[in-house]
Length: 243
Image (tube, rainbow, N blue to C red; front, side):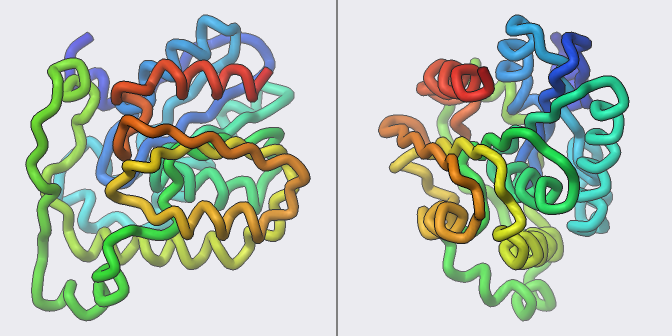
């Protein structure tokens, strides 16, 4: 499949259980594509949403707000609920925060949070509201990756600090209502994650009302757990939890 197509929203029609897949901050649906294909083979209906401002242009990303990202997920949710009797939401990184947010406000049967970015590891994020007036962009540090991983990493290299501020707003808005969540939750993250703070996962476990919260630790990969070396473990655990 061509790179440009991988950036787009995808949908696989299956049974009456719908899986809504949400990619991360500055990324594209490509990072959720392989997981989506695995879920398709299990018979699920699968929709990989493309968030507003993502996979288009840096300028469009910079002008998108966290409420636009929530609306993107809500639109995708509405598409699935029109033909599905159950909805499972699976989000990676910021997508995990959006999964929590949508489940706080709409009926959801199960939640899967893959390296959920409720709290960032970079402590400078608290200064973003000030820094954004002096620094317009920052960049992801360069990384050497296998071709098979690069194929699915199609997001922006630069990050507008204004967009990072919107992520912070989403994190705060979502944390406020975690107690509304009472459905089964699976959390998978890596001990070597260089982006998210484990504190955020502790907060989720402590503040949700769910009676079933399962946590799985990976020990080899970094943040992009749906495309890195332990992705098959991630796929297997997600499928087992949904069943």
